[in-house]
Image 1 (cartoon, rainbow, N blue to C red):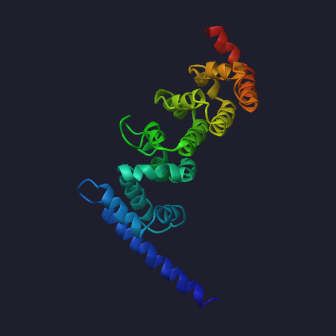
Image 2: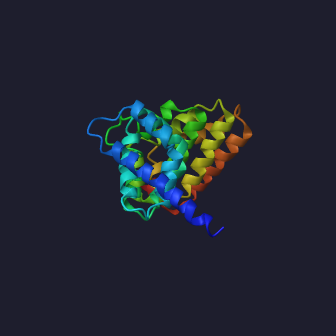
Length: 244
């Protein structure tokens, strides 16, 4: 057993070296990388492998910065962006990472808040491409981003991402999806700086519509009542209503 451990470590280092070389070639390519190039890279090194190396092999010189640069270029392509909803746990963990480069990849690059609303990596555009389950994942990511800071929450609001909640709640044909969205909204209401921002949206009116709609499932109406109750019980709610 003692003899096998060094061999396993040597194999791991060789594999890491190949990944580092491929990621470096991809990141430093002088032209624009297309979907075909991304698929070729990920066929050799699947995205979970790259992310795992980023999380566990940070001690390898140059690996972290190279993989970050590589992933930035991957996620800027249409194909790469389509993979983001499946790797949201990494984005959530990345926001809390000790490494500034990893946090930058998770939050400040196109993965979360691209400079242009038209980019495929904008969360609103990702949600438009997703199934109902994928859209719920996008909303879950938004909820995870909200408590990072009040400035991040403000960016979410100004990026019109809360309209995704409004759209899903307005379309209450799928009870399970609507319930999932209400559960996420229930979680968001608990966030300290959420109250002021949520009051600027149409969410409270939509919740009131759910409560008053006798044709909807009772579980949806009950959850909407709980969200409204939690929101209205906040101390700063009274200041906001007085100001309005």
